[in-house]
Every structure is written in C-alpha cells, then in structure tokens.
Image (cartoon, rainbow, N blue to C red; front, side, top):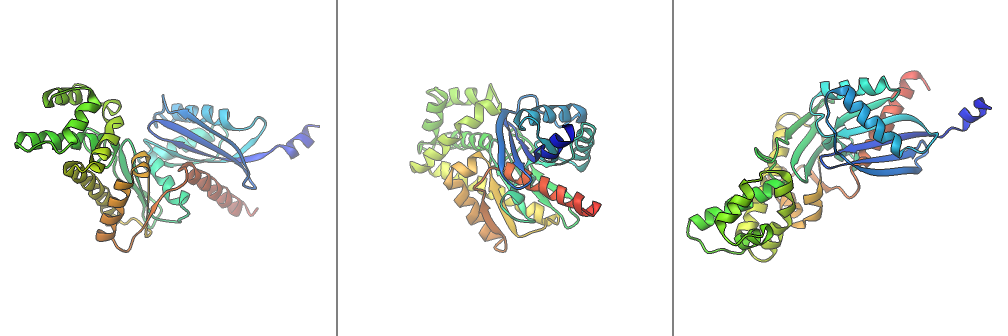
Length: 312
C-alpha cells in the first residue's frame, strides 16, 4: 500500500521569488503543469542567519505546495543574497531540511525568466539593482545600496530626486512648472517648507516610494523638471549596465522588471533609448511575466544537472 502510494506521489519543482515586499511561490509538476501559486507578505525575510532564512523559506514553501507532493528541486531568488557565500549557506541549510535548492539574488531571476541563457537583469521597483553573471558563472551585482544612498531609478529615489529638483528650482527663483505643486498635493501640504519637512521627517520607503506616480503624472502634464528626473533615472539604470559590462557580465540581453519600470512607460522608453545610445549591441527586453518564472527555470536546470551527474 505504501509502496503504491509512493509511486503515485506527485513530484514537483518549486520557484520562489522573495523581494522587498512580497514572496511569490510557483509550483509545477515535472511535466510542466502548474499546480500551485501563492503570494505572501515578505515580512520577516532576512537572508542571514542562514538557518533562520531556510526555516522561513521552508515554511512558506509548504504553504504553497499541494498536500502529499514531493519537492524534488527548488529555485530561489531572494533579496539580500548578494554574495556566493550567503547563497551557499542558505542552500546548505535547506539541504539539511531535505530540500535541494539553488539560491541566487532575486535580480538574477530576470534573465532566465525572459528565456535568455545569459544577460543582465535590471530591477526598478521600490529600489533598483543590476545583476549579471560573468563567464565563470559568478553572479555580479551593481547598485541596490538603498534609497538614502542611491537606488536611482527606483520609486523612492525618484521621489527623492523630484523633491530636490522642485526645491532647487524654487531656490533659483524659477516658477513652478507643476512638479512642486504635485508633490505638495501628494503630501497634503501647501508650502515648499512643509514639503521638505514631510519628506525629511520620515525618510522611509513607505513615505517616499508610493508618491512616484505623481512624478510621472507631472511629466505627462508637461513638467520639464519631472521629465528631467525620469531621464536621469533612466541614465542611472544604464550606468548599472555599464558597470556590470565593465566587470565582465556575459550575454547581450538586458532584461528589465520591477513595479516602476513595468508600470511607467516613460521610464521604460527612456531606459531603452539610453541603453541603445550607450550599448547598441545589447538587446532590451521588458519582462512580461513574473520573475518567479525564472526561479522555476533555475530549479529545472539544477534537476537536469543532477540527473546528468547521476547518469539518470
């Protein structure tokens, strides 16, 4: 009875994408049939210590996998996995829990999700980061240093730079071209001084990032300052690509994803134009599917590699 049950036990691969705000989990049978998908808040996620990270991932994985299924391979892209050592430590901790997993930074999911073997992934969401892989397969990263220091092209940084631009223009005696008024309205204040306090007194992602659509709306309304902020954001994203190419990133594709660049055509178009000017050899692709798709592909690649290694 138990032997028969083990023979019919469904075997699945799992992909997990743990970003700054949410965790996506996708489950497929070995034949490619979708049999589970779930999204959870990413509250509590930290890439270290590894044992705690593995426990967190295992707990959420079990919530998405159909009861009775056997997990044979897991692909994970996770924020905070910025070094090979961090990823390897989580892999070992998951192996101790009976899960064969490959772990990478969440930005490394974009290229496989788009169907490329190699290339550069650019995330422009709440923050921004660039991820590539060199010829030896080592993951290399640029940017992603947080909204206070950088993250140009991400939502929080766009609001930061838009506020700076509007206030500097006011200091220079320039009439408001719509950006200052839009930001003031978004924060529910009526003066530049109040705007500065509203932004400075709570320098958090939660206070800054949700206002990013206001900047794009101001650009659509003709604000030259807002247009300049968006153009500068696109150039900063292109600079991430340049740094990764300079460090040996392989491939000729740039895959972009993230809540800002996928929802704001102005940024995507400006990035594609800047990239074409600086690196015409690179193919630009705006990811049209969830990045967790790339985690599933990594899980399948690892499974295939194990089968080849075992002679299966």
